[in-house]
Every structure is written in C-alpha cells, then in structure tokens.
Image 1: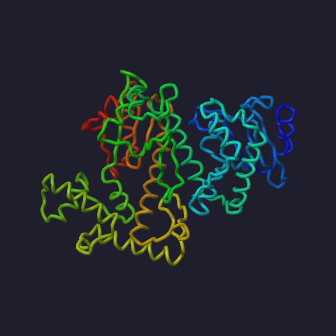
Image 2: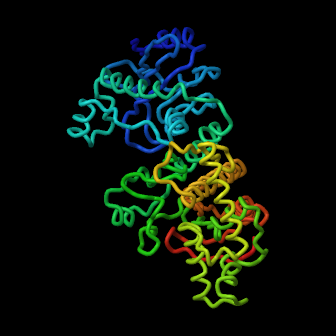
Image 3: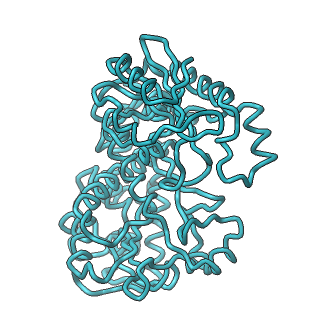
Amino acid sequence: MKIIETISEYNQFISECSSYDWILVPTYCNGNQPVYIDTLSVLYVYVLMRDEEYMIVFNHTEGLKLPVDLLQEFPESNKQFVYGKKKFKTALNRTNIIDMDMVQYFHNNEPIVDDFDTNAHEHFTRQFSKFANLNTIIPISKHIERSQKISQAFLDAYDYYHEEASFASYDNLMLENYFQIERNGMFVHQTQYQNKFPNGIIYNGYAYTEYNCYTTTGRPSNRYGGINYAALNKDDTSRASFISRFGEQGFMMQFDYDAYHLRLLASLIDYKFPDNVSVHEHLGKYYFQKETLTEEEYNESKTISFKQLYGGIQSDYLVIPFFAQVNEYTKLIWKQFNDEGYIETPMFGRKLFSSFFNDLNASKLLNYLLQAFETERNMAVIHNILLRTQSFSSKLILYTYDSFLWDFNKSDGADFIYMIKQELEQNGKFPVKLQIGPDYHAMINVERKF
C-alpha cells in the first residue's frame, strides 16, 4: 500500500499505472450528503494485473491535501471500475469509468451488498454523527481496510463483466440521467418542508433525491433522507413544500402519461389503439357493450384493465382483440424464457435470467418485462430531453415511472413546453397530460394544445 499525498508521488503513480485497469473506491468527507454537495476525502486505487494498492489523499487530518482537480489527469484509455459511479461523477465524469454495482447487477440482478464499514466507522458514526466531515477524522488505515473489502467483493464479480451495448446503455445513459436529475435538486419552502418531513435534510434551500436502479426490473426506487420521493402523498399537503426556485418567474410543471402500461404493451404486441380516443374508453366499449360510457363506467374500465394487466387475463376478456394478443404474447415470452433460460428487455436488450427470480409465472414475467420496457423507454426519452434542454433554465427535478416534474422558468416560453411534450409523446403514440401550479401539490390540468 502506497499513500499518495504529494504531486511528485501522484505523477509517478500516473506514469507507472495508466496502462492498467483500476478499481476505485472513493471515500467522501461526509459520506451521507447528496450529489453535488459532498467532496472527496481519500481515493483507494487497486491496479489490476500489477496487484498494487494506492490511497490518494485529498482532504484528511492525517495527510497533506492534494487538489481534487488532479483527477482530471486520470487516463482515459484504461477501464476504471468505481464503487458508486453516479456519485463519483461529481468528481470525475468519464466514459471509461464503470460502475461496480452495475457489473454485479448484470451478473445476478443485485448490487454489491453494502456492508463494509469497520468497527471504527460504526463507532465514529455513533459518537460523532453531527460532525460535518466525519470521514476526515476516521483513521486512513480504517478507510483502507474498508476499501479493500469493497475491492475484494468486486473482484468476485469482475470476471462476469462484458463490454456490450445493453450494459453501456445502463451504465452510461441510465446513470447519467439519474445523476443529472439528482443534482438539480428540489427547491423547498423550508417551514412547510420541515413540518411535513421533520427528519428531512435541506442544503441551501434544496432537498435532494437519490435514485436506485438496482431493483428486480430496473424500475428505480427513489429515497433520500428517509423520504420516499417515488410515493409522495397526493392527498395530504406533503407535496406543497416543493416550489419553484425561480420565484414569481417560475412554476411547477408536470407531464403524466395516459394509460402508459397499456400503450407500452400495445407497442410490444403491435396493437393499434384508435386515434383521439382514450384507451380506457376504447376497452370500456368492450366491457360494457356500449358506445358511450358514463363517468362511473369509465373509471370501472380502468380497474378492469389493470386487473387483467397485473393479475392475469380472465377467460371472459380473451374475446377482446387487445387482450387476445396480450395473451398470445405472454405465452410466447414465457416459452422463450423457459426454453432459453432468459429473456431480453425490449429496448436495451438486458438479459433477465431465470436465476434472477423466484416463484415466477407467465403473468409476473410479463409485468417484469413491461416495467423494464417502461424504464428503458423513459431513459431514452429523458436522455434526448436533457440534450435538447441544456441551454434552458428550467430543470427536470423528479421522474416517477409515468410522470415527469419540471421546475419551469417562464423565460423559457411555450416552445420549451411544446418541445418536452413532443419528445414524450412520439407523434401522439404515448399521449401526456399537462399540469401546472405554484407548488407540487396545487397543480391544475392544462387543456391548451401545444
């Protein structure tokens, strides 16, 4: 183990090791702060093939301090496997950086188990939890010990890494999207936020989210500071504390997909719903055998459709062309899954192996595949939107399955709203509804055609 704390030591390390692949384990000053807030304390580097270890010191009481911008001198030609790529992007954002958890996830559908803290880490956390930069006083030797455990855990999965398009889509496009959304933060009304979320954390007026894509289907969870941002209550005033950072010049803007899973499924089975007719109205005509539905029948149509979608199609509904095709598609993918031992996700082609799941049946497989398709399509759409909106002030601040929340700056104008709608809808194939409001709770529907 070599400790690097001078420029000359750093330059020698770069010169000797740049042609080999690395394992990187960052330790941040605080460790629990969100994206764009925390900074590096030390960085462990294991050089593959040379079997050498280094610890680079950036901010720690036991060593000299190197400037973090030295990371920009890291080579771009080798592979650098990092523990927590999404957060590490705040320090270094390169295409040759690969997420350790993603390698493990593609191998067994789970991230590396996060259970590496030493007794010293646990002791310091208990005794000095309110210390602003706790990791800068925990002995470097203990950070080395923890980093070595993480490195060894990854080496067990390293042989399963394959350079393939599906992996790149998840490791690059997907993690970059979540990184961009997280760093935008959600501006809050401080008093309301603290009343609703007494344990919530605010940084300079912002609350931050944290996406986890390492779930059964890749559909992300989103929690930070004890708050589940993927399930904020619509009925109480929990959402009211999230307001525009632009003051009177801004408002909250949300797009929601209409009957998203039904339309995604129609796309998979090549079924065409009629234009300018609600999916629930279209299917309701079959359910109730009539052309015009009452409001109660329309709502009941939603319930019936989702029961078929998530609970398996009842025989009575197989006479409906849409569900007849869904049934055939379900049987097809179930056969493929059992014959070949895996099935590929529709857009990015990630292999979902039978070893990933317990107690799976044909209906569950369809739902898992549908959730994966939803997520992958959303990632492609968000990627395009982020590219097209780089020069605008408005921020995408929350993505939740079938809805997208922006902190909108009025100076961006109606053309910005139209552009977002256009990207989401794909020529009307996936129609969206627009809501706006002064906060995330007081949202009203907007019927204007953009």
